[in-house]
Each structure stands twice: as C-alpha cells, then as structure tokens.
Image (cartoon, rainbow, N blue to C red; front, side, top):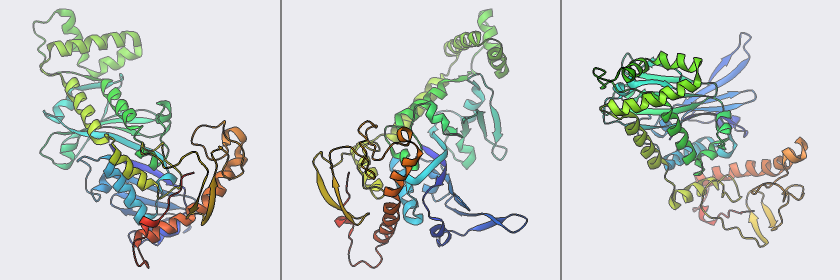
Length: 409
C-alpha cells in the first residue's frame, strides 16, 4: 500500500552510513569547495547526508523488489521486511525516522483497457488533470493540490506488462494532509499501526468517488433533449471547471444528475467496477491478524523496551503490580510502579493521555523536553550497539537472542 517515502533520520548515524560498505557516497560542493551534502543510492533508496541532517528517500515497494519495480503486491509483512532490512544494514530506527512525504495507493488489474478508463476520467473535485506520458505510450493523470497530489496512471505501459494494471495513489506532499484527516502518522514506525489502514483505505475510496467519469459507449441519439445536452456538455472537462467557479451548488446538482445519466445510458459502470477493485485490494494488502501483529511487535521491540499497544493489537505482558527486571539497554535495575509518573523527574503525569511516559512539553513548557532526552539518548546509543552485535552474531559462541529480556514499563 505504501510506496515513496521521504524521511529525516533524527538519530546520529552519519559515521555509520559514511563507513558502510554497501554505500558509495558522492560529494556535492559549492564554488569554494565546501561540502554541501553527500549522496549514495541502494535499491532505489537515496541516502543524503548534510552538515546537520540525514535524509533517506525512496520507494519502499521498489526496495522490496531490489530497486527494480513496484507493480506487484506489497503487503504489511513485506513492509516489515523492508524496514527490518534497513535497520540491519544501516542502523535505521523506524521510531526515529520522521516522515515528510508519503505515497500510498494500490495497483489493481482492470477487466478492460487501462487507457480507455483513463480517457473516461473528466475531473476530480471539479479540477482538470495534468497529463504526463511514459515513453510516448501510457500516461499519468495528476490532480495537484497544496498538501497532496492524486495520481492515476497506467502501470502496464510503465513496465510493459501484458495485464491491465492501474495505479491509483495519493502522494502526500505535506504531513498536514494527515492531520486534517485525523490520522496520526509521523514516523516510519507509524506505518505499522494497523489502526491507520482502514483510514487510508477510506481516503483512497473517497478520492475515487470524487472523480467524474464518463462512459463513451453512450449513444446520444434519441435521448431527451435536456438529458442529451447535459451528457454532451458534461463530457467536456472544462464544463465542470467553469461551472464550479460560477456556482458551486449548481455544480454539485449537475454532477449528481450527470452521474445518474451515465449509469442509466452507459453499457459499462466503470466507477462502480474500479471502486470495488480498489476496495478489495486495500483489504487484501492490509488485513491484520494475530500473526502479523506478533511479527510487528517483535520487530519494533528491538528499538524500545516499552509496551507497544498503540502500534499493534498484540498483547503486552505488563501487569499493574510492581516488578523489577534487568534492563539490558540501561544495564541496571528498574522498579516499575503502577502509579503514572514521569520516568525521569518523577512528576505525577496521571493527567496526561494514556501511554505517556514523560512530562508533556505542551503542559509544562519546552524545558521538560530534557526529561525524554535524558532517558532515551543513552538507551538508544547502547541499544544500537547491542542490535548490531546480536544481529550479526559476531564473536558469540551461540545465539543469545532467546535469552534477551524485553522490559515493559
């Protein structure tokens, strides 16, 4: 379901990346020879290192296919495989990878020619499309808006496939798009929250329903004059653009009538057929289950020793009783109380939302940001070294992963 991502890595892994044998960085400098940034590529992913930032951009779907293509299915478990590979090879922590751009959508196989369907699309929210071509063959329809672009194109022509593969996706340019739709997405790890999949599916289906689609099998001859005129005018995209600018209420009424006539007099119900294909494909790719949740939980547990109920439905072993365990990340003992207090300064945070572990910056000001940093910085530094050692198995006589203790607090 997910494709292109643009992320900012907030953990300090510059030296690890620059010394990684899988990456060959190329420097770009200004006229005075000052290095501006260094760029490397691996499996269609770009690693960009500047003086004060590390960005990783690319197609998650193509990465799964060794950077070759993104026309097949890409499931939740495939996504876990990709994120796990990025973590093992490049020390990337998904909880510390902030999202800036994201593409999500589906590839569906149509029972008719893709270009015929694309030629039938008139507008989206009263807006005309911008058309782009692929090697003079298939083409892409793009509806640009401030925070996102709706993209619909012929995936078959892009990769010279024999099947009729349509790509329908939303390219989010600004994360404000998700906030406006009440969807919490801020890091790579959030892509594994099964609570968001139904929301994203609904966004795709709502966008598809906003398309105005014509049926070129309609025969205008012999139709009542009023209906004939609306079908004739409505088959021109510019008619809807001009009507929406002049009178939005009239635009909505005419569009509703136009859709009824297309269904009544057309031989193909294109909108209903493709809508169902998109809905079914979303369900197929994102259908959560206990096995999937367990795999996600186990993967994310590498990066945090807290319970993760908000990320999966997989249960936590934590209970309300006080307990003490060895925390390998802090190399010490931690006593966990049922009382909800800041783990750093001990302030009572019972008034904060469930799942809070530190003082809220919103409630107590920017100075309490140190509560989170003091707790997480040493743990993340040690944990990264621990994962690298255990993951590689270097210098160990036997597999110790089964003996590792994950602590929930």
